[in-house]
Image (tube, rainbow, N blue to C red):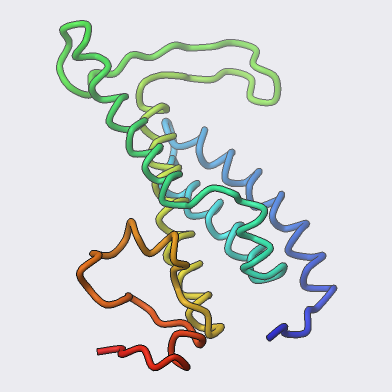
Length: 178
């Protein structure tokens, strides 16, 4: 069932998507010396993706993203863990910080780059992936669709258990929800 779309809301959200993500980038880079960082920037970017999915629909959003948000979170987790383990390869303690100070960077001026920024990048991706996956599954469930498609249910449920969520077509067939 398709719901009527507001063209004004869609246009405003598409514009706001870019504004929110520019703000998220500023929060991300600001977080090493002032409040901000990977977590809050990830929340801002996830909010922009969720707003976009509300404007264009969850089906269109899944076609645009093409990547399961859990994979984004897994990549972020690997980056965050890698930033802590990398110093150990050079006989330094876990999460040892290495920093570089860059001068005259376009749009930023001076920029501090280091291991904390790489860790924050991992946190940023984890937050985006987890927030988007939770909201997308809940949105699909609220629209009467199965929260997880058959391909998506396999990694998140045990094969010996009943399906996590029955879609309308499975309920008509007499699927048992208990």
